[in-house]
Amino acid sequence: MSGLLHRRALLALLASIASLPGAASAATLVEAVQARLANRPPALHGEFEQQRTLRGAKRALVSRGEFLILRDRGVLWRTREPAASSLVITPTTLRAVGADGRVQQQLDVARVPGLKEFTQLMLALLAGDLGALSTQFRIDGELLGAHGWTLVLEPLAPAVAAQMARVRVEGDGFVQQVTIDEAGGDRVQIRFSAQRPAAEATPAELALLEGA
Image (cartoon, rainbow, N blue to C red; front, side, top):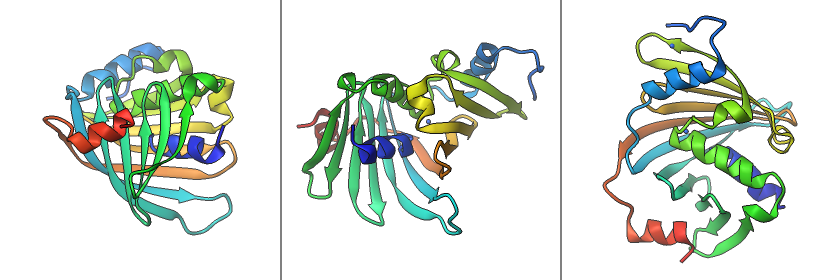
């Protein structure tokens, strides 16, 4: 598997609390957080700023762009700065697309051990569909005030744990920030903004998601 494409999928994330009692189960916490998430529209647009800090480095590498989530279809992650590119994440495929629209690399997730599960989890996180997380992660967290929440996820599956040690997710009606502590010591922080329902995807966006 391409380490670069796998890493980009992880960063795209990825491509989405009054405290609960300490004895509350992970499933109870996830249910409470899910209830605070806004009703997810069929299509959601937004913007992101990603800061990647390499282990031992003092200055983060920053990229910015926009994303589109289509329920049950996938995520389109488009970087504008510092260089234009797109990453398409679907339940079956990871695809890197250059600024010229040409596919640079594509992976069939079913052919790579552990990647299918990893991709499903990343899609769930970006889409705010948290139902499957309690079986794949050790979960802690809290409810903050009337609307906010934080989840801390530690992966149980070895294939995912080999990529990241911990994921911290913060939000309210939407997932607002994701912080990924990678297994190798690097840290990635992604802030989401301007999240808004979209009536439908454009033909160009659908073409990217469908590989046309």
